[in-house]
Image 1: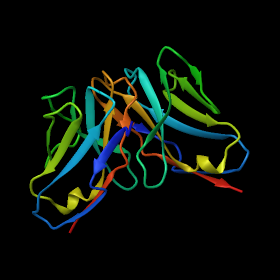
Image 2: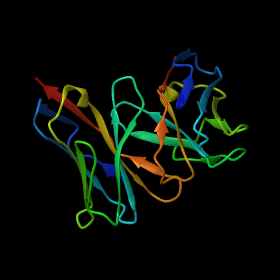
Image 3: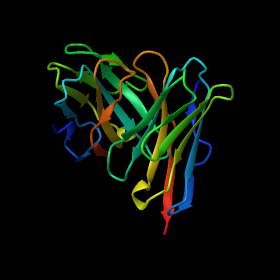
Image 4: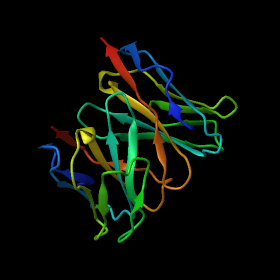
Length: 113
Length: 111
């Protein structure tokens, strides 16, 4: 199993541009999550999904949208990127509940100029 | 507000010594805690977890201690090795689907 994979690994955007980060998992997990990690801070939850076709807001959802059209994929979209969204983004998945172990992807480093 | 935090941002230990990384939490309703290890350029990796009905749990070279009275969590790593160099995060479940991470402690190993 590849586990949790993320594409792209790196991206540089200009302010106002849009992009989509893709997360894929091959572990048949129901729950998927998007976090951002900023220097000197722990991970903060952006959005999450408890199953195909469902999404919900996390701690810092503003400026982001998500979609879970397929169970194995969780997409994070930035419609109009801002420098404040410069961060490292991590996707995670867990089996059936939030108390199950979350498995993380390798991260996407995004810079917004 | 509720938070999960760490006492020290950095910890240096000699190779072969034991490491103890501490974490304080403030949400007394949390009932599940996890320690993650994050190596440079990688995503967090699960190390060990503990539920609030336990005060100690052991894994391979790692032990987590939970003191609910003082809301304190610690991770002990026995015989620290160079491969243990990383940032360690404690995290807690605060309500449904809300895994809250602390800031992290950077562990460095001196040869």
